[in-house]
Amino acid sequence: MHATSTVEELLDVLEDGRIGFSHGADRLDRDGYASLAAMFRDLSDERAVFADELRGADFGDAELGGRGGVASVAHRGWRMLRDAIAGDDPVSVLAVAEQSEDRTRSVYEHVLSEVDLPAPTREILRRHHAAVKAAHDRVRVARGARLT
Image (cartoon, rainbow, N blue to C red; front, side, top):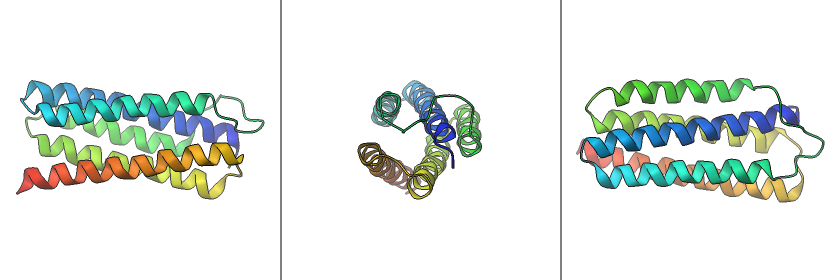
């Protein structure tokens, strides 16, 4: 995988997550789910920080440009979140967020396994990947709690 498309895929998936979590937070807050809205806002902010870190990371000779295929899959996932937000059910919003985090995790796993990266950049991606996995688990637990 070429590093240029790698950078763009990661930035795309992070931006989609930032926007998706932000929209989800707004909807959850309007519907009276303040604690879930706060979690979504935190995750939106986290995605913005991750994107900033990647913009400053050394990806070797890569330059930003082009859009990647894996990120477009994640983007479709966040479009599903916007559709779920139209409903009144917080479980739907949480389910789509969980699915989208699965996709985000997959992008990170793909990059970490397929791309030769400088050690400091690889460490940044490992840290992000761990945080994405933790976010997925938080969303899954919140969804499970709403189902019982």
